Length: 259
View (cartoon, one colour):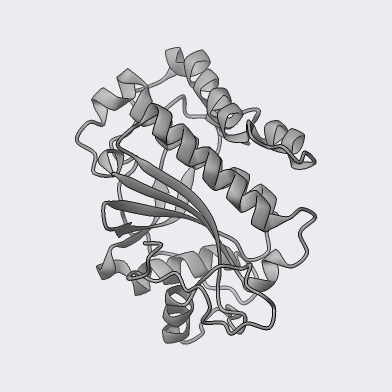
């Protein structure tokens, strides 16, 4: 059951999927989330102060074939726990009502001036739907910064005072190879839209979107050497390099220009 805050978002994503001009996608997502909040907030408890807090939730049950995304997410959080990373970051606990599933961001990490929020994928959904999921987190984040009730309650929150937020979809390299749309173009469309929206409504915020891929040789296997996971996270980069380029092309590392 979807969280009440995101009712209607899947329909918006479906409507824009086949269009060449997706210029209104993020605006419509934010408008729907704001409408859901306005419609349902009379039911709201005060949202939990645990929302938008970088934390590590390390417990998981190992399994050779099931819940691979959760297992990888937990491993990454454990590996980088003391390096400004966290996982299962709550965004909407208590925001509307007690119904629906949790809306936790898979991974987050602190960068200069702000944070990267990561939607982690291995097999579920597809790159377009994953981007729509990430955009709804971006819209929810902006709701907290733009709605006076929420902005006042969370005025001391470090994440909600950030000057820079990066929205990232992270997946294996092969995840991006069978898409039914031009993902490079779609990435640019999403990035332009969130930058423009934040620039118009939250002047002190640099908001961006990107796709990222693990190195092509990385295949997650439960119980694998965590040093290999660390190297894959550090070596992640753009999935839109030429197929004959080296895996090191366009790395996204803590010291790169993109962060």
